[in-house]
Amino acid sequence: MVQEQSLGGDLVMVLPETFFPQLVAMNNVQNPIFIDQNYCHENKDCPGQILCSSNSNISFSSFLEIETVRMVKIMLVYCVLFLLFAASYQASNVVYNVVKLGAKPDGKIDSTEAFMKAWTLACSSTWPAMVYVPQGSFLIKPVVFGGPCKNKILFSIDGTIVAPSNYWVFGNSGFWILFYKVTGVTVYGGTIDAKGGSFWACRNAGNNCPPGSRSLSFVASSNIMVSGLTSINSQMFHISIDHCHNITLQNMKISAPSWSPNTDGIHMQSSTGISITNSMIQTGDDCISIGPGSKNLRIHRIACGPGHGISIGSLALHQNEGGVEDVKVTSVVFMGTQNGVRIKSWGRPSTGYARNVVFENIIMKYVYNPIIIDQNYCPSAKGCPKHSSGVKISGVTYKNIKGTSATQLAMNFVCSSSNPCKGLILEDIKLTYYKKSAAATSFCKNANGSSKGIVIPPSCL
Image 1 (cartoon, rainbow, N blue to C red):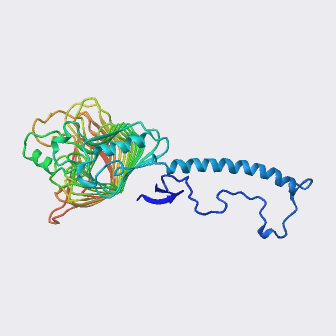
Image 2 (cartoon, rainbow, N blue to C red; image 1 turned 120 degrees about the vertical axis):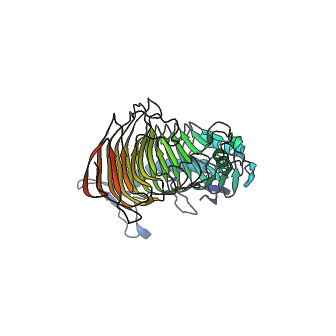
Image 3 (cartoon, rainbow, N blue to C red; image 1 turned 180 degrees about the vertical axis):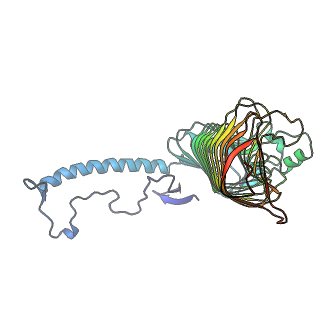
């Protein structure tokens, strides 16, 4: 939350403590900045000299003269720095409230221009700045918040940002809210509502529709944090990350109906250093999808469902594409999802790969395909390539995965005939068929690996 307080006679915004940790507020303080190395409480029994060594001493008066000059210089420097910082902090170019720049919180009047004004001012600020969206509902059309900017920016949202109900307004750009070539941006709190219902209806009816837009996208950006954001009813992907580095997504709430098409919760590709934690994702497609060129990923404490699970792929969409590696997915609960943990690739030649992947400490609740590798991926069953997948899958560990399967086939490894899966490890698995009348099963094709501990259903590796 952003608070207002009186500072020097002007009413200014006070940024969160973590945003300006170097700022200390003074209120009627007798000695704002003070160093006292001649401390003597109540001036009683004060020492008359300072002993520097056993062989020499300096009189208190001469020492005081030297120290006074030095301390005055130090205090002057600190005072100047503090006053400069405070003056900048009070200035109107530190916090940019979109309402004060013309935005209307009624959810009906277009506020795109005001948001762009706020961003432009914040981006050009030499001091860390904030774009502030207060309570209310704000309608904005497709917008690009471009960089590079001169300093860090906090995009703080207390209200709701809504998209136009007419999906044709989005055109063919594929984006609604896009951050492009930015560094050091934090998006905190609030709700974004893409109002995707009419677009899904158009798609599901097979009508002539635009391609659809991602709700919140980061492209060619780095050192980004998104925290406490709620995204609802995206046209396509809720959150999209492409050619980025060092991105943290935490405490997210993502929601769309189970029947909404292609509404992936979080999608990433060609990106490194991605962390997704403590989030709830309910959507119509993959809760999290990991595309080619994604490396060094950490996914932890996620509730997924409804949706299609957490997927690596689809890979081999193109013959020349990057690989996926160093992925760790831990402490995830899947509830009624189509898949649990999945690796998928098209059956065609490719330079891609998936390696060094860990799925650990996972609970499945009535999941149709709890553990699956599918290298003949073709969701529509029409125009399938029907070749052997060139994607090389190796070093995948499944550890401490328990729960119920909605189908009897709980573990299904269908790998490439030309590039069999290598180094698959099953450890402490207990997946049971929900009907209890039959045992869960596993299936392997062109899959090699080993098992440790108790593995139910019995390993086919």
